[in-house]
Amino acid sequence: MAVIEKIEGSHLKLMIIKAKDQIEEKKDYLDTINVFPVPDGDTGMNMFLTMSRIVEELDNAPDPLTVSEAAKRIAKGAFIGAKGNSGVILSQFLMGFCKQLEKNKELSPQEFAVALDRGAEKAYNAVVNPREGTILTAIREVATRANKVVSDATADWDDLFVEIYAAAAKATLETPKHLPLLQEKGVVDAGAQGFVYMLKAWMDVVGVDQNRLKPINKEINLLETHASAKPSNLEEIQFQYCTEYVMEKPEDPPQEISHELKEYGDSIELLEDTNYIKIHLHTNDPNAVLERLEKYAPVQLVKKDDMIHQASLRNKKLKSQDLSF
Image 1 (cartoon, rainbow, N blue to C red):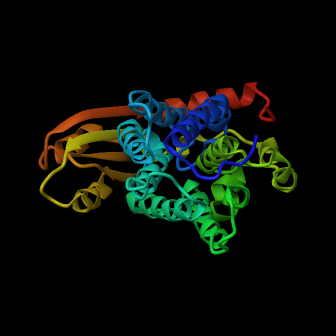
Image 2: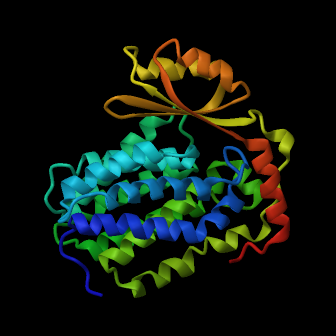
């Protein structure tokens, strides 16, 4: 398959579909290595659900699909479908990435690199207390490497994607250096690993020479890192519930709301679109959070997952399967 010259709307749609398929194939694996910020074993499922909702939006788009229309559909699906820590961060990356593309008819590597930079910026801004050693680090390293590559005007898609894939894989391999918990449990960050899978799917659509990946995969063998993955102590989970709230956009600045929520828990992430905001929070008192939010604006949707139960299931899965698949 030859490398494409410019990415069009149909390519963007296929990139999202292939990424969803790739993450679906690997979601059980991602769930099993998920230990940060909580070992609730749902990173793969959350990223898959997030991508699936985006695919639904794209499937309802008219043909022929322009870059601008594809970008708007991806951003809309990302906001609606965002699930869990990694799913929310991924959705914010895609929303920032797509906002940059809305005025384009087709894309060059240089324009793509700018969009990656916007996506990284939005992903970091969504997290109240961003931590290095997560999917955020992989996203940032990809954006940084992309801008270095396209500073050479002769760089093509093959050059760009090989380099950003290498940057994401290297950043993922090094996540345990930033987060001692990952080192202790013998895994890399699951969200970052999922991001690597997404980039690999994008490369396949663009038509990158697979032979150029062999040296990277040989040097950066992410699967080997998980050979000694360990179960987690459930008593280490400080907050029991992973919650999400979708509410009408209030008059007060959303950042003020997220600051107030610090007294209820952690892992606070905030997404915005035109009319609504979505808040992700780990807490022990979902009802108290709901009451506080409704002082600002009506809450349309509440989702609650018991992370202690999820972590228990992860431990059982870890004891019963071979992680080398």
